[in-house]
Image (cartoon, rainbow, N blue to C red; front, side, top):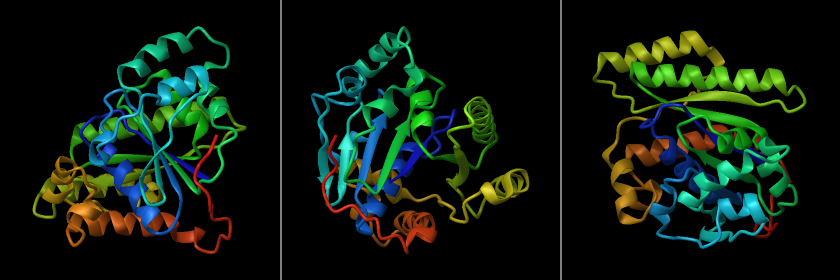
Length: 258
């Protein structure tokens, strides 16, 4: 089971879109994927048109949760909305509070991938996601503030890594909102490649209206505009992530259960 956190300290970079599109792309490839919304804003639920009475907030406190099937091979845990923010205050007083998500999912079976969509802030829920996941994907749009947010996120990951050497967590940056007509996009991409080198995905997510319009139709970009540039780019990202894992025989065959 491979576990990814989609995280950045800067909003508006395509974070939730990346979480949804990657999760659906992996499920379309035949992998069984669990998508977890770790953000009280509940944006992940919009394309799927679902709402669960028992979400991540309940999982972290009582261990009880509804795992919803939203597409073939794709399963979803809602955040719980405002309840999740309230739960964070309760967790602050508990021992091992940064490992609550790990403990809650330790018996999870039936998944090839778990993807956590995190809020654009440093909070206890995100620290739980970092403790649970193997790798962080940092979406970074082609502007200076987004780059600053990406560098801040990378620094936080490295600090946590230094404090917890038993749990290696790597990260890679995903360029988003790239516009080849704009000089700033070229400049930002060049700066990122110079600064982060091999930590930059080969895939670049280009500006595309279909990506923004799809959630309004309760669809992912693969369903709303399968021949669009947005669908092509996220398909390419899916292929890049599958990359070295194509030879693996450990493909889950049952629905996720706790």
